[in-house]
Image (cartoon, rainbow, N blue to C red):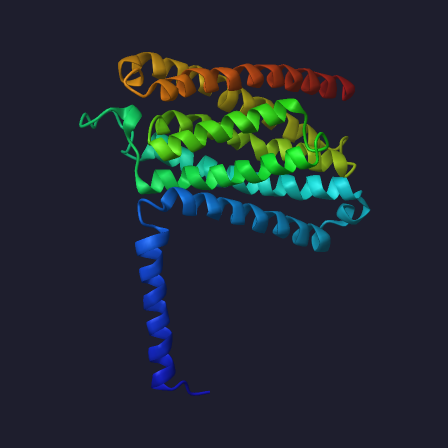
Length: 275
């Protein structure tokens, strides 16, 4: 089939208009926080639906689950996809990007941001809103009060950092801890699929232990050390920004320690049963 020149010109015209729309509005600096949050909400919905679609056709155990179990199954698929995205973004900004490097003495590290860093946080805010909404709607089936507190603190801290541009380095440091989420979700998947006694369940449990120790215990100790070294820059943030930097990581760290104790006990219990 031959495409006429008029059709080609029309298509190029629409493409040009779409590019202008994206550049001047959707990705323009004043709109990035809002478009990225909206994008995070839409992406969460798409991830939820994809989890449902893929599981229906390729996971045999999925058909035998209750309605609530299928909702949680899909919700965990959504959270795993977000975790992969935000972990990759956080590792990039904290360890590979020059945005928060101490080698750049031009301004305070606590006040640095970029359109890309704002966009990444906005997507995460959209996810936290979507997941928190589901947790509250189905409460307590998708998680108890500790999940509500965790997601609320995360959403507030990430949203404030995104809109204000303050403390984005520490926000991304905390978000690296999301690397443990896919492993926690895999543990639930294996348990729900009746594979609690499998070697895969044991290996996943060991991976959870070490990942949690590194990303949710040792990493937070490093965050506190970094805050201590840059205290003179931290206190130049707004009062609420300082409150977020000092309180949120501390509260999350306490919850991480409580969960780590449960993970350790669970792993020891599983290993004892296999002896």
